Image (cartoon, rainbow, N blue to C red; front, side):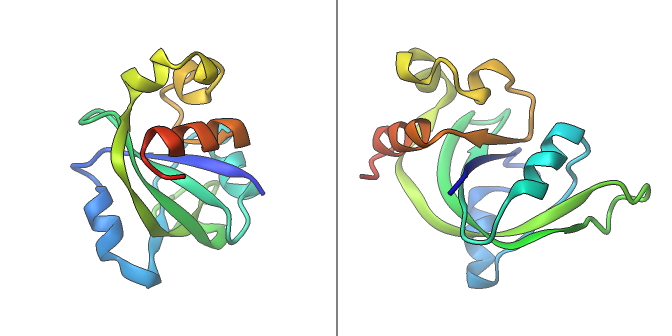
Length: 138
């Protein structure tokens, strides 16, 4: 199973809005980067990812699950990009800030540390376990 990180500016789409979407979840659209697109295309239903508040807060705040695989993004006039659907699974009891992630030697290779602009990115299993633990989830 693969793990992911989804970045969103809270003013655009927040963790609270994701939670409010309930079991039906919502689409993750607006990705316009080809590497992020490849990550979306690789996602399978049931895989999980961190929900990361970018710009404001800069922290992992929750966990989402992919509930619909890649399909065309209706907001993309070029027809080149797509999206997946995700639903909220759990909030982190303690948000894990970017500063805390950068301070953790075991996370030095994390894409978030080395390519923070990428909106959808892979997370290794070891990184997944470590960030969850830092956030208060066993």
